[in-house]
Image 1 (cartoon, rainbow over the protein chains, first blue to last red):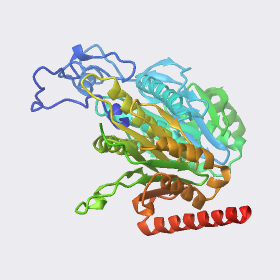
Image 2: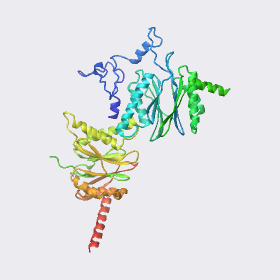
Image 3: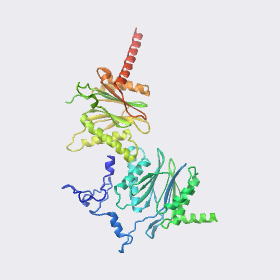
Image 4: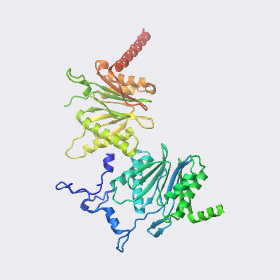
Length: 276
Length: 224
């Protein structure tokens, strides 16, 4: 069944009162792990709470080992009369260290569907690639492309299965299906919201400020590109965890277009000079 | 040997899908309403089955749950093909497990997809399914299918009423005692399932008989 197949993984810890039947193996038993490519399962050692484990390793512990989950991005997406604009920053920080300035935070699921990533880089990449696999299977089984609402719902259900286990992901699923342009925000709690403008990541408040001032329904294509560009540039300028280049995509009815991949500091100089 | 199951006829029109079933005459003391042969799987899909009623109950229940499950995960109603594939896959599983026997039913599944296209599918106990323009299952299905092959034309199905009459005429080929032993259900595009009342069926049957008489008169005029 559609629902049963999706909600297969164990959710969190079983209480002491949940005594397994004699002879049955619990799904969290390491020996039971199926390694099945069909149903994604994450095996957990018995008695483990992921969030406590990470807390003990990171932050203000006295130990020398500190693992900080990579947070920090700005991503945004909005709908306008000519389709959808998706713009993302590209810095990948881990605490105070910058891993790379060239991460691609947009996953191209198919010519009509994109997912953005913010939060923990590993979580985003893994789950969105899994989503891409499911979307492809949906197309093969049903002969028509998955709708944006279905794709976002699949991702939301994956997140719900592993709720409160320490996943960190804020993503926007943007695409064009038979009902027109679709934009959904999905995060690690399983929240799924439909809207016409979203921004995620540590720099999102700055991006919202710029977008709210400039967004109109009747933007021309160039104006929309400029709005997305400015929002990312100003957000990455103010937010120490964001930076790198602006990767911008324009989702149209037939196809998407990668508009540009421009360095943030170059753009910042341009804006400075223009205002002087 | 089980008695042959009553006849079921399915017609796919241009703007309508029709399911007609032969009603076995019920015993005097039996409450007719508990014997439902045409079942809605969702607002836009319904099915009729021929075979073991008890097996059908199980399949229909699972299909109904799957329709809602699909709506929940995908936010769209099932396509007729999807739910047919689900039922067929379910049936196939039972042909390949130990300790179980196959579901003893054939089903006719009709409905409209979201894009407004009408569909008719037939499944059988082995788990195969095919799309049809018009089909019959149950007793004398072969004869009725031949009747349909002769009489299913683009004109015949272009108008809703004509499609309904075609289904009833196909049933009347085999069913004795006319309209009293027929049950009919239709789905029109963007409208929910409609079961015909006994009166409405009577009306259609009377029209058909009138048309027959007129056709006979014309024939006899030509010959004389």
